[in-house]
Amino acid sequence: MERHHSRRRTEVENNPRETDEERINSVSVPQDLLVEILLRLPLKSLVRFVRVSKSFATAIRSRDFFRLYSLPSPEHKQRVLLAFSELDKEKGCENWLFFYSSPSSSSSPVFLFRKSFSAPDLRYNRPDYVQGLISFVYGEEQIIVNPSIGKSITLPLVKSRENVLRRFLGYDPVDAQYKVVCMIEPMFGTGTRVSPNHCQVMTLGLGSHDENSWRDIECSISHHPRSNGLCINGVLYYFAYVGTSVTRPSC
Image (tube, rainbow, N blue to C red; front, side, top):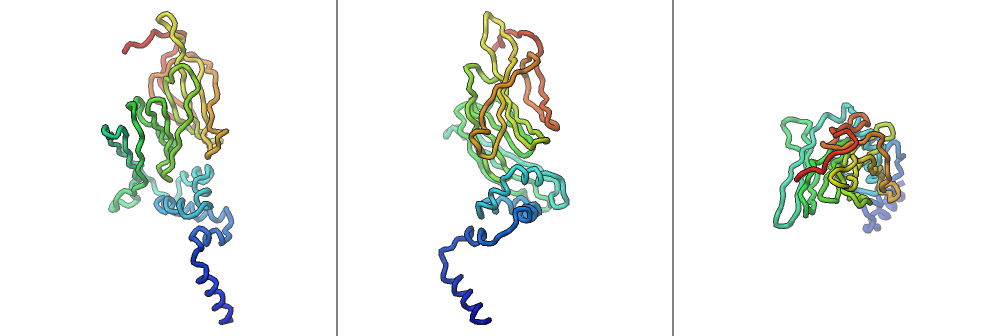
């Protein structure tokens, strides 16, 4: 028995090139058990484990895990997301710092990550926050950020000759899907224009190029959005002018 253990130690010691990720992956853990363990961890630990191995990153960044982790539980006390921004005019960018409030009132907020956005144009819409994701708009560029895991994606440009009036971020709790809605501005005529009756919608995927693409949607009510959106239980609410036409807005 002693010789067997000695040989085992020698084999491990003689393989110094084996990485931490390879050692972790060599231990077979059922996926459902891995998810159950990760669900009990605090957010700060999840941020670290995303960088530990590909299997951990895949599990933590999955849509089902995000939905389960967002549900109230004794392990997950209510937290507040804190975001601070600073405009760097010299570098032409806007810097954001993201924190989560600590479950303990005596502890400092938990730092999540820092993100810099190139800002050649000023942000004309306030950021939208829905179910853990934040949407930023800079000119024609729209960026979706997940502060919990420090990940962001830049959406493809809307394929339209007309301007985008409003961009909304929503969440469908039935299918556990995030969706982005862009209301398109029609071409102007002789001083008047028809209110937008179509928009483009994108369902956010997990890195799938086929899923992250725009598709046209016809609106049954002619209207002109005039506010940011608010998504409640899968329904998007916003203020709008309703009618067949409105005059060209004055600057």
